Length: 250
Length: 271
Image (tube, rainbow over all chains, first blue to last red):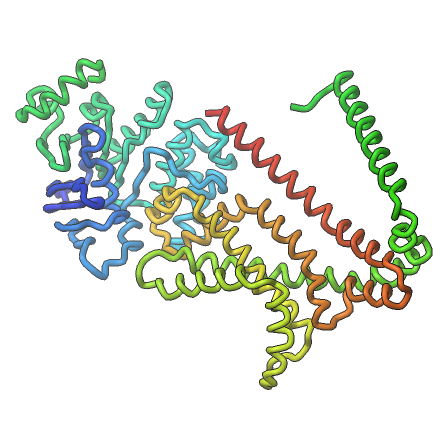
């Protein structure tokens, strides 16, 4: 199968007030590719993901999704977001809905599926990710790991062509990280195209096709994980990875 | 934490004893005051009390009706105002401004003035198709005034829902309207039920103000009784009726507040 360009970001700039968070980002994802964004907190990883999902308006540059410029004026953001799923660090499940309703809300109200159809699909997904017995529970009754898996299922229920994961394990207790990473690994194996902001370096090394090192709003290095982790060219990347290794995280 | 066993009984007994002592002291102080015999005749007359009970509760049903009808409209209209005020972006500025002017105006003007102005002013316009019934305009005035308060309560609730909930909803492709409808407003309403009920307790009392336009509700009826007997006991009866109507709502509010606090404590302790 020939690889289609799913996401293309060109010269993306984004400021909050006077602080320029993204200073010209270029990145490309082909179908079935998994790209991990690494870098210190505040380097712009989350902002980049939020811009791709059109949750933040951009200041300059362009973003193309499946060949269509989604940052052009008059693009229907709701339409674009159907195809791009995002999972947040803090889960952001809807606390007033059961797991099942969290998962079926999008398919029912956005895609227009019948309740029956939406629930059948949701049950399949929940079963696949080991959450079937939790479908009637409310989010506050779930562990952090279960909540995050439910959030992933909620995004998948929209059948997106691209998934954005924003430090999805950062808010979890250490013993719950693995179950969420396993889910992402399975997604990667099933061919999901993903852009993942993460602090889990060994996970990035194992799963990613490419790793991008973000520093101060710029992608300083972009390449296969082994290259980035074991022979980084840029001194800033070397410095960052040195600190990670010293902390025993790689 | 709930007390159990012997210590539970003991604290109940202590509470009971201290309440009885307190009540006795109040009764003694009042009944030994110089003006008490006169006050007792004027306000606590058994005969007039029984007579009032025959007419005032019937009139009180009108208060209940005014309250119930106004409440439904307030709940809907206030939510509409609150949502107008929460609309983001420069396009909606005129609507936001309108909502702000509305709430500022109706919270600022005394309820009694709104009732007079609408109740006597609107029918006097003699526009065909506009009802001339005083009761109608009394209810409209209450709805306008209380919607201003209640919309602020709703707005506080909407603002208290974390922006990440909106981001999550929008990221699924839900429109602004659907995000409000399915995600923001349901959470907001749950959070503001206690202060909402509090405003309704105020509304129950203010139904008496509609009497100023003429309809014979409980307060008006008691005025009539007082005037024909030169005795104030009917007022006491009306007061008791209002309190009886309010107590269930007040206790419900307390219970909801306690339940919410417990739930939050449980959540905080959980993770």
